[in-house]
Length: 340
Image (cartoon, rainbow, N blue to C red; front, side, top):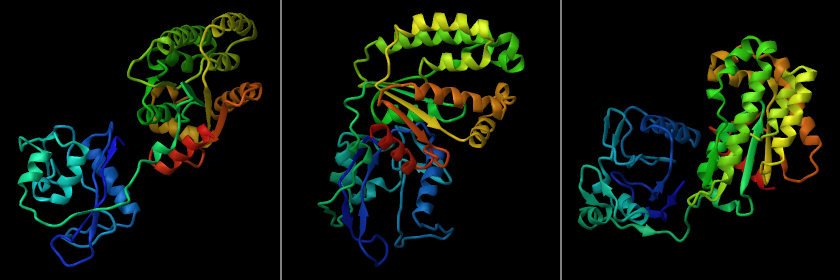
């Protein structure tokens, strides 16, 4: 959420009823306009609104409209953007002016300020003394410059890293596993491809973390990474033979000393059944052969590493009963735990 306007009380429009409370919010999203509308309808339903095919002007517990979507003009049966009633509604224009008084409305070639001055809507709107606020603003990340999000395969570490990077103005660094040519081969023949896989991951993670974290970004306040360098040793300990692992460990120790360490290390714990569900949902062909036993070994490796950390910056968060992508309350709970 980028901006929130003041809340305005306005008389009921088109029928006799109690006054309405209105505001406008500006958000950043990676979702398409159609997907965003779908999510909005789910929110409305969760808050108690039941839409009907013949719904007209009436009181409702919640009403969320998409007014604008970038500078796009969208004409679909269930979605029109810009909202066709913008210029006619003072209770929309006034909070829009608060958000951006110079914003040009696509198709109107006029700013919000100009539309407000020319609107024929003479209804009285009353600015309220109370206002909405973004709960994210309650969280203070100022003392944290580098966060590493870790977890088993399918735990959701990349999804959480994305959300945190948007809300807290962070440079996002994602593991480049998709580009590793050995990964699909490893799941087909682990004995043959384990060593080249782990060596290639080690080299790539070392290069990425050393270069990207130390590279100054003028416009970002912190760095969030969806893995920690130590995962290389955890996975290698599971996949490599003893002689291979001893050689690997020597090289890893030399490289690990040079890498910056996270201010906060977050481990997302999720039970094995949920992990297998998530892996199945994302549908990567090369992950189809992953077994529960392999995931259990990975989890044990992470917990053993965490147990030996003599620092308070490690956060183990059980997300087995959470859906922090769809449920904002779950996401905010995780943020609180990271900062606790």
